[in-house]
Length: 105
Image (tube, rainbow, N blue to C red; front, side, top):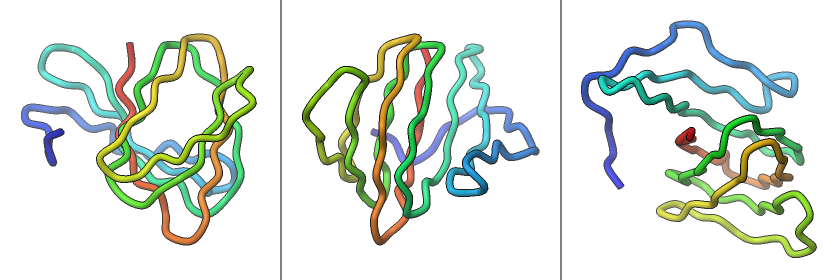
């Protein structure tokens, strides 16, 4: 996993969710693909998806449970988890903020 993206456009306005507990910025890469980079502050949240997503952890850690799953999974820096399209996932962040890159499609 790379620490940076080359040749991107960044939306200046932040995406602010859950009263500021999650903040991200949209990136559009040279090939037209879309990603977001952001942080989740300590909280227990549920996200809904439209497109399939790969959530790449770049800092901190979280516990995550995909829609329909009984088990929680821990995700730390250097790991990732996949979320199907048109579903949801629960995420719990405790202590340090969770930094991520969301890869869409």
